[in-house]
Length: 217
Image (tube, rainbow, N blue to C red; front, side, top):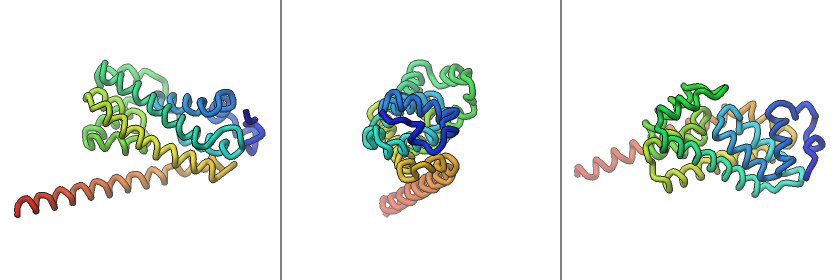
């Protein structure tokens, strides 16, 4: 296994969450990345914008494989999403929110934001929600509470998670020792997602209007 202290530019980069993530990856390799993304999905205050770019950078230093990091990170996030889906399915949305809101650094408003997002956008909220902060993890709760089809939920979750993970891991691999810049400029990525969602909504509206005109004729 690689030595992460040698792989990073400076030892002070291995403090806080980054330091913990580095130790987990050094101990468990690619599966450590999967474990971290599982925890990040269930406990939102752990930022994927920090973990995945670090993992991407480390794939270029030897010892862990880029493809396996992508696969395990996606599987870990999906497993975490399934836990929240199951909780919403079994316990219900309101009771789930009350339970999880007791966790440190978890805000009830984030749950309400995710529920509102799901109510407004339906199935597409699962895919796009995986790309948005404050919604990414918690969108699984209302999906479970509303008994969303599990196969559909799984497809949209894996697809959205895969896109997000590929972006962050790829950015970390390309930036090298400057991988931490991904976290600093992640808001611009979020803006791009919002723009893409807006374009998607406009496309849906135009499509429906055209269908109505065609049926009226």
